Amino acid sequence: MKKDVSVVICGQAGQGIKTVEGLLAAVFKSSGFNVFSTQEFMSRIRGGMNSTEVRISSGRVRGFIDRIDILVSLHAGGVSRLRERVGKDTLILGRKETVSDEERKLGDFAAVDWKKIAEETGGPLYANTVSVGVIAGILRSDAGKAEKAVEKFFAKKNENIREKNIEALRRGYRLGGELAEEKGLSYSLRPEGGPEKEALLDGTEAVALGAIAGGCNFLSFYPMSPATGTAVFLAGRAEEFNIEVLQAEDEIAAVNMALGAWYAGGRGLVSTSGGGFALMNEGLSLAGMIESPLVIHLGQRPGPATGLPTRTEQGDLLYALFAGHGEFPRVIFTPGTIEECFHLTRRAFILADRWQIPVIVLTDQYLLDSSYNLPVPEIPEEKIENRIIETGKDYRRYAPAEDGVSPRGIPGHGRGLVAVDSDEHDEEGRITEDFSVRVGMVDKRRAKISGLRREALEPEFFGDPDWRTLVLGWGSTRNIILESLEELGRKEIAYLHFSQVEPLSPKTGALLRKAKKTIVIENNAAGQFARLLKMTFGHEADGAIRKYNGLPFSREEISQAIEKEVADE
Image (cartoon, rainbow, N blue to C red):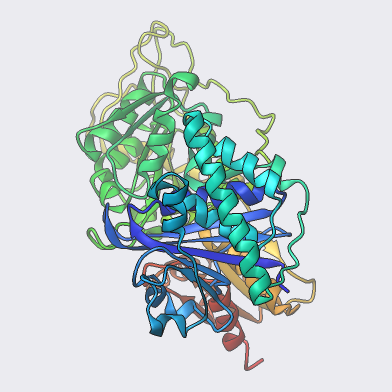
């Protein structure tokens, strides 16, 4: 009896695995089940071997697990590729021609010729819908709601295609039911009621929607996975939300376009990944010198250089912190959930505008390509203020201010001259080599740091009042760590999640001092967040759990690693 079923689909790029994932999630969400999905794929358009995991549950599920309950193998070699995650209870579904005798012994094999069923229905294109029907039948999903979900999923297709897909679903559903009876499969999945009314979002969509909610009206980019999806999403809605989306000739042009947009009164976003961010460093420093707002979405992937372009890693934290030459304040958000992707991207625009600084939203491939059902994010009542002033004749762009923030004007709005320059400058924005003016301007820019610290988001604490061991994580590991600790059920272990890493909340220090033992979990080899904690608070972590093979942590991995770390207590 299982309340949480993990379904993994494996096949070659070009076989429509993404379609199966989307359709499967839509079918079960429409029936009142909670769903979570995430992908891992090779860097190629066709061939190779990719997989996607879809968790289906009565309760909320929001993280990656190793366990596979049902494995759908769409191509030869699919089962072998995932052999470490396949157990004797794994139901392996595939055509006899594509699952070898050796692979069948790894789990409980059932031959399903969805290609033949699809061709009898109308053609090989319907094989993916047959596979969705088989899974729905095995798990005894509501057949009527499943059909409505398929009809909605293919709503933009013609009537004949919709009918063929519904027929493919029905035939697969019947076969799935027969398999469940034959093998005595029993699942205690019960519709929770509510998920069908919720949104199904992935991290990419949430970042893009957060930008819209933050008043973004300009985006410049050069394609680079995994961040390209943000630009594609906004480009598809550019007219609806009055957003100008431009693909630049390179990332240098992209970041300078965004700075130009802010200078002209717009609200600009740049979306990129590590290699692209490297080219933006001079533009980032320019934002620091001219005190321009700037929002950068940096979707991490493993480096250095091209690295693993379609995989995940938390390897750019210190790079984002120290990128650019010279000293200037910045804010770095590290969302750990799809909800945080939305709210923190919105907040990035507000802080960039208020403090006239660059703000970086640091995500990664795992978070961007994961999706789950959630209530539609509510936009706070806090209005997006227009902080641009109408300049007077005596306007000084860099006039002294106690908090370091001078009134920001734009060309043509008022009588003043809005002068900005990449060289050091005086209050009017004119180039200077006066040493005392230089010191004054550096101090003015740094004066913003005190205010940014006061506004820094406190880390989110999870735990019992009598906790002793403190687990720390940042960004996309949040939900996986929470599920792991829930599975362990040890009240002496608490968890601290950081969704902002620069500046760190000063209140962090007290929790670090209280802990008998601290364990830092992160998806990199060098322990970058642990280093940041030491630099900021002088705290040396007692334990470390790290992973850097290009894949996200699983719930099982973290549970076992934490158990090992606290075994001596």
